[in-house]
Image (cartoon, rainbow, N blue to C red):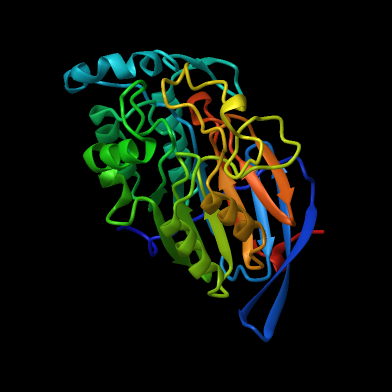
Length: 336
């Protein structure tokens, strides 16, 4: 892979001028380190300052492109892809307000990543509206042409053919294996860790809204490592007060609050809500002293939440041209 070791990165955002917060972590039980972290945001431009960032890192973050392209290979699946194939054929650019398309927005964002000499491109799910072979091949070719390392984690639409029978985790495994596998570049599709310049980025697939036991153990292991961590997931973690009915680890998310299961032609959420494992994951994430932040997508709207001192940053949708231009910088470079 070209340029720099394979990296993983994060994304930040929000309307918080210069907002300091602090975190602590220990490399062993008796050693607690305190580090100030500062986040600034101006539209899609985000700057992230911390003492533990030793070298500058440039990230271009993409979520929710919703590519709909297909060819004859997709004909047998049209009954399952029909709605999403029509959902984003034309969009309105988030900044210029001109008409555009997901393909144009994706190419423009990759061109921008090359222009700013990005260290890594993060693709945090729903890059596809359904698992089209043509769309996956097109994305692979476009990413390869940039020469920039990238990280991919699936969103719920990337593997979902609406109305296809089967459990969500089984369908996810099936279409990751049959369509998406090349995007993981040999890494575990459901969980992977990448070290870059002293920070460990964890890409964890929560595209079924749930976390399994292996993913929880994976996070726990890295949370105990003492390394500064960044978490990449597609579906935002539950934030109290946030005006959405779902969210990974939402105690109020159950059959009665699942309003879209008929539209999305998937099983209705269980009466008893999330699994114990998902709630345990949620608690570990927000009680991990070495977690710098969580970066996500899914809701097609920029937002930031601070949960137990941990920032969660959500990106606008790339289908409308949205992306995040993120700089990770050493705290000494912060201009007061």
